[in-house]
Length: 120
Image (tube, rainbow, N blue to C red; front, side, top):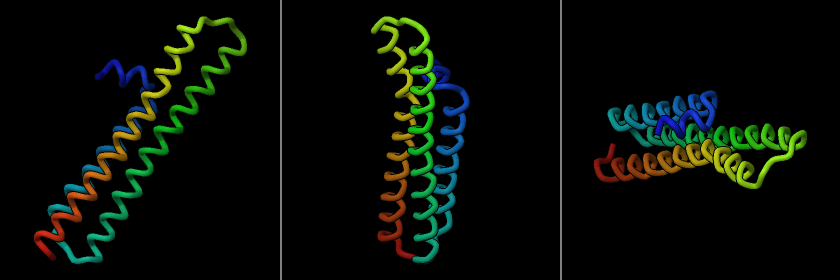
């Protein structure tokens, strides 16, 4: 797991990890504070914003990685194996961003369901 973290680039992977932690913190605080409909909607909006931010930062990390790889490829001759390896590594931040977005969706569903079940 740490190998994937370092391959994805410490900058973007650290940012994505902080986004994931923020998402989980908002979710836990929302579960602990059983509020009214307005508070539920506000929590859901925060979860949506943070989840989308994770997805966008992951895609941005991939695009910056691809740009760097293509810049190097312009100046040197590389083999298809190296190109495939570089493309695989560039997908790590996007996968992490998608994972964060999936966690956002799950947290939102759980929060809505718990609000329906227990009421305000």
